[in-house]
Length: 80
Image (cartoon, rainbow, N blue to C red; front, side, top):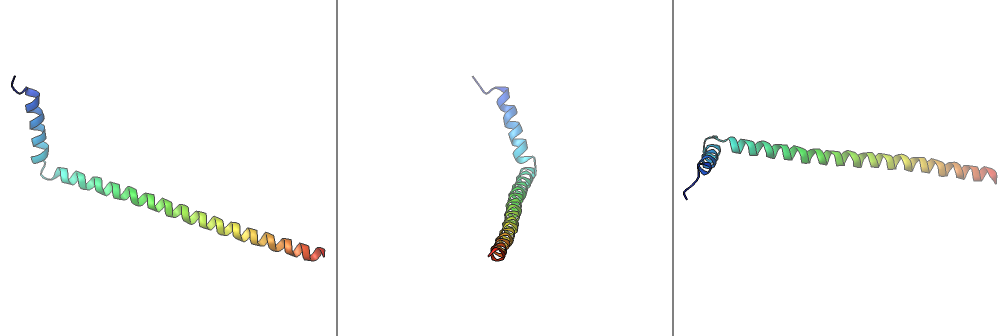
């Protein structure tokens, strides 16, 4: 039982991809790396935006709470 013709086809395709591409594999890998980098950067930007939004919401709630407590104090003083 010798090698079947499918082995030769698979071997030929692998050789063409590895040696006949003239840098196509490295170009594909470089493009993939750029895509992953852009994806990670986008995730970090989203986390930053969410953090800034939550900080501004806390500040808004804090100022509302401060104005509410001041109004209560004034009401208590007026009621006394």
